[in-house]
Length: 267
Image 1 (cartoon, rainbow, N blue to C red):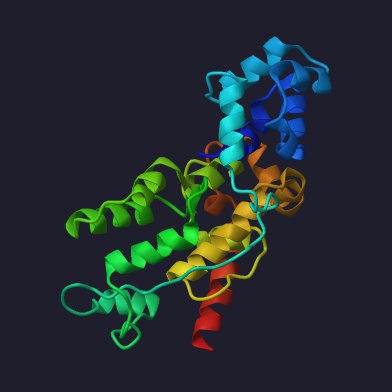
Image 2: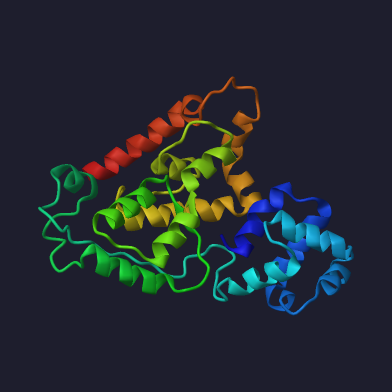
């Protein structure tokens, strides 16, 4: 998990001093690696001990290690979670043809797979696209990483990228439910609808799921915008609702969203 991500994720639990340190580090990433513990403490008007405690709270042995990890973060990272590139690849099955259920669910047919790479080649292309820097993987549930693990084991494919994925994989479905204050996980389509967004692309296709997950992720990383967009639903949960779920409390909303989706499918 990248240093920048750790800092952003921890904002809600930081003390006032830690928030000042976090904000200064995020705003001055290029400068931080050149500063000593004492110099950073003077910039933020705090003590050197506070800087060390902050680094340890993030899981580092001290400020020097924090600087090393910060330097590893990609220089071209988009701090506002805007889309900078896309990657998609079909994978040719090693055995047999496409299952009829998968064809119906995703729209991927045997014809579409003609000329597609095998799993190993597709993974190597994916690794080149990711690059060698720090990376965090977000997905709607843990299903995708489990599929990667299953395929890799079955096809005897091991790589540093797979280990990196296992270490830095974020179940954003779980995280989003936590942001809403609910126990029940909701579908990606419902999350998109709850934010009053239109679902982009076809459901259950890898790229469309990634694009729509990214839209919700971007919203969640902007606390003020998230509060504004989700206020009607968040206000409901701030009342004593006896453990009701988002779908229980907003049945008309989701029924209308699903109705619109079905209408689009028929068209």
